[in-house]
Length: 471
Image 1 (cartoon, one colour):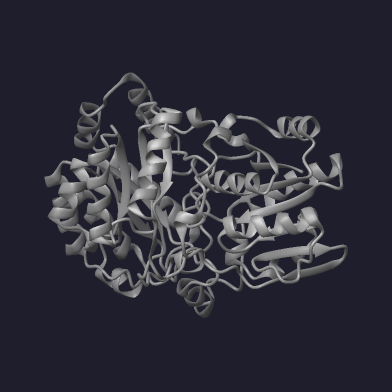
Image 2: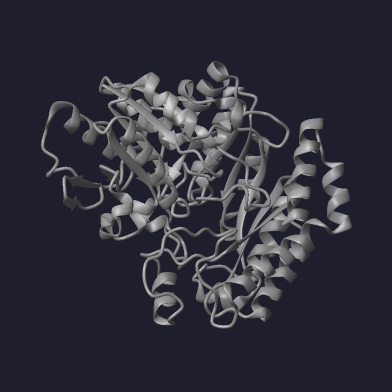
């Protein structure tokens, strides 16, 4: 049996991370990361004897003609496509094309849409070329599904799938979360084009998933559905083994340590940092954090072990918004966190969010004011998206801002709703003004140019600056 795992031709999206499905073109700062989701599934499929290839068509700059050529040349028995909430309708075109080439090819989709939206959403004809969709942590689901297909076993007992059988439509409950993350094989990086995923300076970047789950109660976040509320961590030994493989086998020494909140468990963070230092591996890395989970000791070890950037979920400068969104922090927490990070010598990637249902121009200006005061090295502005299953979604429906589940939107360039006081168009304009006020500040420009390390990095920043000016 042969399987083609792919990101479909089209616009660049951060497809491999269900919680953060960033529209790369709409973003001011997001760097394309490798498709670890496909890499994990490829490793699982190999274990059960399936010959597998991975194709990231948008990253390779390839269109549907290359997909067609690969289907004809490789002749897969099944394909697995990674999809996002913002692209799921357009992505179905890939399945339609594949079915025209050979109708017997089994088309499987994975991604946040199938975890977030009610299964009946996918009953309509526009999804008729999709044979299966995966719900839950796909590494667990894909192996059991493909084994059943391969051996002609029953599907009824499998969790985490949506499937069609002729005119019939079925779905099962989402799969359980994986308890022992060390049991997963490492992503099949030998099947990825690792040179396509780089930092602004041109160095290859690998993503390493160190934990899953977050107990925070933010009303807009997909984490409870995607990863759960309970923190699950890999062992430090297992993480170090993957880092070592990346360095020694693939020549990659830059990493994004992916977690729903990396800094939740202080002892884990410090133990991992000490293990990195003891390994002697020459790496640089990035991680995310909440402002209320940082202290000087944690930051000391992170810096010492090679951390050069922390992505901080600041979200808002409005105390009302922080309280109503249940972020669990205050404006002062963010000010303190940025001060501590800077003191350690680590750069700050600040995330801000506008467009909550109750927000008006005043709330957004309070957030802009805080962002200007913090002077983050890399600021980004999201527009709140009410995904089904979140408290924000329930609120948007109750306020008649939304009538029901809608697909095809993202938090950069295509907001789903406005607020009670501002239209969707207003929010897009505010986001542009927000970013322009931060990035075209002369002090920021001089500071950024002064920190450039090489020529590729200079070209990247110039390119991003021109993109912001165009938009």
